Length: 223
Image 1: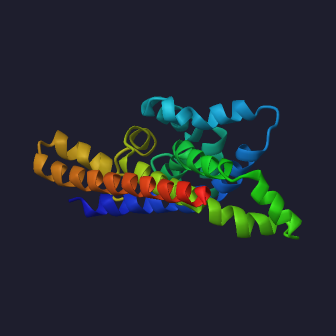
Image 2: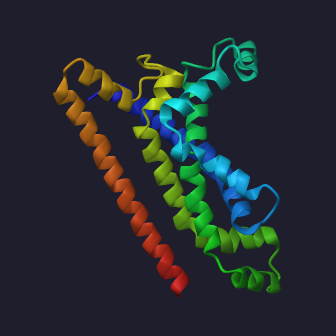
């Protein structure tokens, strides 16, 4: 087991969840209840990482963050290091390729909350913020938690985008998925099997947790 790669993957996954989920809650709520010009275009844009091949998405992210881009040059001028082939670059890429995995479960959760519940809260004297904090979030929490679990698990297993943007630098950008690839290339199938089994177990637990949470969400709304 490549513990350093596993630790880096866990760190990348946790930071992605911490940064993406709070912002995603606001965006998911807007998409669930507001209709505005360009809404369908925005939803299409947010869903693109689901369909684009990882190498294609990774290529565009590499161009976006490279030293010839405005973002890449600005970051390097400010920090003194290139954005690509760094953990910070991996994190930015992770935030982008995980957008649909975070937004869609939360959007479905907010859409499942009846407008009558919100109206009842307003009639009871609750402000929109109080309604959001005391009513909407508790009802949507299974979807929010599902989004966090799915985002974390997907980050651990991502390979193509990570390799394109971060390369394969030991201790900096080599995640567990890339380490598995390295072990296979070195004909070390035993180590590859152990690490693959760990990711399989994490994926199984993550998917099971999501189904359990969705069942709870469904039963809660039936009441």
